[in-house]
Amino acid sequence: MRRFLLTLLIAIPSFIFAQTKQELIAQVKQNPSSIETLKTIQRVGGYEPDHIELRTLFKSLDRDVRKSKQGKAFEFYLKRLENASVGKKAPGITQLTPEGEPLSLSELRGKYVLIDFWAAWCPDCRRENPALVKTYAEFSGKNFEILGVSFDRKHEDWVKAIEKDKLTWKHVSDLQSWQNAAGTIYGVRSIPQNVLVDPEGIIVARNLHGEDLNNKLRELLK
Image 1 (cartoon, one colour):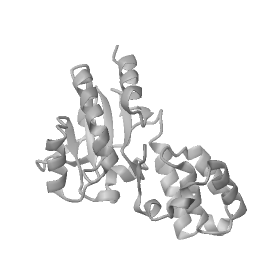
Image 2: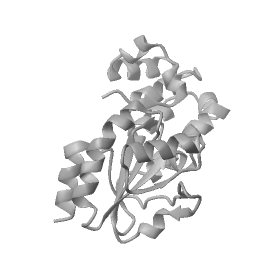
Image 3: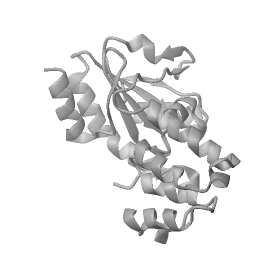
Image 4: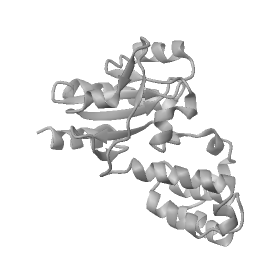
Protein backbone atom coordinates (compact mmCIF):
# COMPACT_ATOMS: atom_id res chain seq x y z
CA MET A 1 0.00 0.00 0.00
CA ARG A 2 1.31 3.43 -0.93
CA ARG A 3 1.82 5.76 2.02
CA PHE A 4 1.72 9.52 2.18
CA LEU A 5 5.14 10.82 3.20
CA LEU A 6 6.28 14.18 4.49
CA THR A 7 6.24 16.85 1.78
CA LEU A 8 10.02 16.64 1.51
CA LEU A 9 9.79 13.03 0.37
CA ILE A 10 6.76 13.56 -1.85
CA ALA A 11 8.75 16.07 -3.86
CA ILE A 12 11.49 13.56 -4.69
CA PRO A 13 11.29 12.21 -8.27
CA SER A 14 9.63 8.82 -8.51
CA PHE A 15 12.66 7.13 -10.05
CA ILE A 16 14.53 7.56 -6.78
CA PHE A 17 11.97 5.38 -5.00
CA ALA A 18 12.82 2.63 -7.49
CA GLN A 19 16.18 2.23 -5.78
CA THR A 20 16.54 -0.76 -3.50
CA LYS A 21 17.41 -0.35 0.14
CA GLN A 22 20.85 -1.79 -0.52
CA GLU A 23 21.43 0.76 -3.27
CA LEU A 24 20.38 3.59 -0.97
CA ILE A 25 22.73 2.39 1.77
CA ALA A 26 25.56 2.19 -0.76
CA GLN A 27 24.73 5.74 -1.83
CA VAL A 28 24.99 6.90 1.79
CA LYS A 29 28.40 5.29 2.18
CA GLN A 30 29.62 6.82 -1.07
CA ASN A 31 28.61 10.37 -0.10
CA PRO A 32 29.48 10.93 3.59
CA SER A 33 30.35 14.60 3.07
CA SER A 34 27.09 15.69 1.42
CA ILE A 35 24.18 17.27 3.29
CA GLU A 36 21.88 15.66 0.72
CA THR A 37 22.86 12.27 2.12
CA LEU A 38 20.61 12.97 5.11
CA LYS A 39 17.64 12.70 2.73
CA THR A 40 19.00 9.41 1.44
CA ILE A 41 19.18 8.05 5.00
CA GLN A 42 15.55 9.07 5.50
CA ARG A 43 14.62 7.09 2.37
CA VAL A 44 16.48 4.07 3.73
CA GLY A 45 14.04 4.12 6.66
CA GLY A 46 11.00 4.27 4.41
CA TYR A 47 7.61 3.78 6.05
CA GLU A 48 8.95 1.96 9.12
CA PRO A 49 12.30 3.53 10.02
CA ASP A 50 14.56 1.66 12.43
CA HIS A 51 16.29 4.24 14.63
CA ILE A 52 19.25 1.92 15.24
CA GLU A 53 19.88 1.36 11.52
CA LEU A 54 19.46 5.03 10.67
CA ARG A 55 21.71 6.16 13.52
CA THR A 56 24.45 3.80 12.35
CA LEU A 57 24.28 5.36 8.88
CA PHE A 58 24.13 8.86 10.38
CA LYS A 59 27.30 8.22 12.39
CA SER A 60 29.12 7.26 9.19
CA LEU A 61 28.72 10.80 7.83
CA ASP A 62 31.46 13.39 8.06
CA ARG A 63 31.48 15.43 11.26
CA ASP A 64 30.71 18.65 9.35
CA VAL A 65 27.47 17.09 8.07
CA ARG A 66 26.48 15.68 11.46
CA LYS A 67 27.11 19.01 13.18
CA SER A 68 25.36 21.11 10.54
CA LYS A 69 21.95 22.62 11.20
CA GLN A 70 20.34 19.90 9.09
CA GLY A 71 22.43 17.21 10.78
CA LYS A 72 21.40 18.32 14.26
CA ALA A 73 17.76 18.36 13.20
CA PHE A 74 18.09 14.82 11.83
CA GLU A 75 19.78 13.63 15.01
CA PHE A 76 16.89 15.10 17.01
CA TYR A 77 14.48 13.18 14.77
CA LEU A 78 16.40 9.96 15.46
CA LYS A 79 16.12 10.59 19.19
CA ARG A 80 12.37 11.02 18.87
CA LEU A 81 12.14 7.76 16.94
CA GLU A 82 14.08 6.00 19.69
CA ASN A 83 11.90 7.49 22.43
CA ALA A 84 8.77 6.25 20.67
CA SER A 85 9.98 2.74 19.87
CA VAL A 86 8.57 -0.55 21.12
CA GLY A 87 9.32 -1.05 24.80
CA LYS A 88 9.50 2.66 25.60
CA LYS A 89 7.01 4.66 27.63
CA ALA A 90 4.64 6.39 25.22
CA PRO A 91 5.37 10.14 25.04
CA GLY A 92 2.55 12.29 26.33
CA ILE A 93 -0.07 13.78 24.02
CA THR A 94 -2.49 16.58 24.86
CA GLN A 95 -4.47 18.19 22.06
CA LEU A 96 -7.99 19.43 21.42
CA THR A 97 -11.01 17.34 20.50
CA PRO A 98 -13.27 18.45 17.63
CA GLU A 99 -15.41 20.14 20.31
CA GLY A 100 -12.41 22.20 21.47
CA GLU A 101 -11.82 20.35 24.74
CA PRO A 102 -8.30 19.22 25.76
CA LEU A 103 -7.77 15.47 25.88
CA SER A 104 -4.61 13.71 27.02
CA LEU A 105 -3.32 10.24 26.26
CA SER A 106 -2.79 9.82 30.00
CA GLU A 107 -6.56 10.01 30.53
CA LEU A 108 -6.83 6.68 28.72
CA ARG A 109 -4.33 4.93 31.01
CA GLY A 110 -5.54 1.49 32.03
CA LYS A 111 -6.62 0.56 28.49
CA TYR A 112 -4.85 -0.62 25.38
CA VAL A 113 -4.78 2.44 23.15
CA LEU A 114 -4.12 2.59 19.44
CA ILE A 115 -2.77 6.03 18.54
CA ASP A 116 -3.82 6.44 14.93
CA PHE A 117 -2.07 9.17 12.93
CA TRP A 118 -4.19 10.12 9.91
CA ALA A 119 -5.76 13.00 7.97
CA ALA A 120 -8.93 13.70 6.02
CA TRP A 121 -6.85 14.58 2.94
CA CYS A 122 -4.89 11.28 3.02
CA PRO A 123 -6.46 8.73 0.60
CA ASP A 124 -4.65 5.76 2.15
CA CYS A 125 -5.90 6.78 5.59
CA ARG A 126 -9.48 6.99 4.34
CA ARG A 127 -9.21 3.62 2.59
CA GLU A 128 -7.93 2.07 5.82
CA ASN A 129 -10.69 3.53 7.99
CA PRO A 130 -13.36 0.89 7.23
CA ALA A 131 -11.08 -1.86 8.55
CA LEU A 132 -10.35 0.23 11.63
CA VAL A 133 -14.09 0.72 12.19
CA LYS A 134 -14.51 -3.07 12.21
CA THR A 135 -11.58 -3.45 14.62
CA TYR A 136 -13.12 -0.91 16.98
CA ALA A 137 -16.51 -2.63 16.82
CA GLU A 138 -14.90 -5.92 17.84
CA PHE A 139 -12.64 -4.68 20.63
CA SER A 140 -14.05 -1.41 22.01
CA GLY A 141 -15.82 -3.20 24.87
CA LYS A 142 -12.69 -5.13 25.82
CA ASN A 143 -10.46 -2.52 27.45
CA PHE A 144 -9.44 -1.04 24.09
CA GLU A 145 -9.62 2.51 22.78
CA ILE A 146 -8.46 4.40 19.70
CA LEU A 147 -7.06 7.92 19.83
CA GLY A 148 -7.12 9.45 16.36
CA VAL A 149 -4.49 12.16 15.89
CA SER A 150 -5.28 14.21 12.80
CA PHE A 151 -2.71 15.86 10.54
CA ASP A 152 -5.43 18.11 9.16
CA ARG A 153 -5.23 21.88 9.02
CA LYS A 154 -8.91 22.68 8.48
CA HIS A 155 -11.27 21.86 11.34
CA GLU A 156 -14.22 21.49 8.96
CA ASP A 157 -12.47 18.88 6.81
CA TRP A 158 -11.41 16.93 9.88
CA VAL A 159 -14.91 16.81 11.37
CA LYS A 160 -16.54 15.91 8.04
CA ALA A 161 -14.17 12.98 7.59
CA ILE A 162 -14.87 11.70 11.10
CA GLU A 163 -18.61 11.81 10.43
CA LYS A 164 -18.49 10.41 6.90
CA ASP A 165 -16.21 7.48 7.83
CA LYS A 166 -18.13 6.83 11.08
CA LEU A 167 -15.05 7.06 13.29
CA THR A 168 -16.73 6.84 16.68
CA TRP A 169 -13.60 6.75 18.81
CA LYS A 170 -11.74 9.65 20.44
CA HIS A 171 -10.06 12.29 18.28
CA VAL A 172 -7.60 15.12 18.81
CA SER A 173 -5.57 17.52 16.68
CA ASP A 174 -3.67 20.78 16.85
CA LEU A 175 -4.54 21.45 13.18
CA GLN A 176 -0.90 21.92 12.23
CA SER A 177 -0.77 19.34 9.43
CA TRP A 178 2.74 17.80 9.16
CA GLN A 179 3.88 19.96 12.07
CA ASN A 180 1.43 18.24 14.42
CA ALA A 181 3.18 18.23 17.80
CA ALA A 182 2.21 14.65 18.63
CA GLY A 183 3.39 13.44 15.23
CA THR A 184 6.68 15.21 15.79
CA ILE A 185 7.42 13.62 19.17
CA TYR A 186 6.53 10.19 17.77
CA GLY A 187 8.80 10.66 14.75
CA VAL A 188 5.89 10.32 12.30
CA ARG A 189 6.83 11.34 8.77
CA SER A 190 4.27 9.25 6.89
CA ILE A 191 0.61 8.41 7.35
CA PRO A 192 -1.42 6.35 8.02
CA GLN A 193 0.70 5.21 10.92
CA ASN A 194 -0.14 3.92 14.39
CA VAL A 195 1.28 3.07 17.78
CA LEU A 196 -0.23 0.54 20.19
CA VAL A 197 0.16 1.37 23.88
CA ASP A 198 -0.56 -1.01 26.77
CA PRO A 199 -2.53 -0.16 29.97
CA GLU A 200 0.70 0.88 31.71
CA GLY A 201 1.55 3.34 28.96
CA ILE A 202 4.27 1.24 27.29
CA ILE A 203 4.49 0.97 23.50
CA VAL A 204 3.97 -2.66 22.50
CA ALA A 205 3.74 -2.36 18.70
CA ARG A 206 3.93 0.08 15.80
CA ASN A 207 2.22 0.06 12.44
CA LEU A 208 -0.05 -2.95 12.72
CA HIS A 209 -2.91 -2.83 10.23
CA GLY A 210 -5.89 -4.98 9.27
CA GLU A 211 -5.71 -8.57 10.47
CA ASP A 212 -2.22 -8.07 11.90
CA LEU A 213 -3.70 -5.53 14.31
CA ASN A 214 -6.73 -7.71 15.06
CA ASN A 215 -4.58 -10.75 15.79
CA LYS A 216 -2.36 -8.72 18.13
CA LEU A 217 -5.40 -7.41 20.00
CA ARG A 218 -6.90 -10.91 20.28
CA GLU A 219 -3.60 -12.06 21.79
CA LEU A 220 -3.45 -9.17 24.26
CA LEU A 221 -7.12 -9.03 25.21
CA LYS A 222 -7.87 -12.75 25.53
